[in-house]
Image 1 (tube, rainbow, N blue to C red):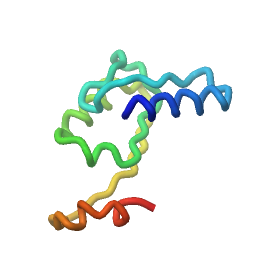
Image 2 (cartoon, rainbow, N blue to C red):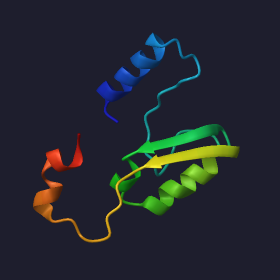
Image 3 (cartoon, helix red, strand yellow):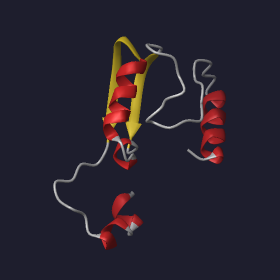
Length: 94
């Protein structure tokens, strides 16, 4: 996340009166939260961008409370995507 994205997320939570939302800077491979402290992990197109997906999954497991939930919405491909397709943002966004 960029600083602007963090600021927008913080402002959006405040505008909705959500006092239980905290936006932190960090990497998916090393989440800045304590073991077993998270109720829900949501990834919307982030895990597929990380170079070490196994590390991300370990972090999710480490940080989730017992009974915690995971929601993942990432793109999965079964063959190599050509570079020109990777470079065309219109193919990857709404």
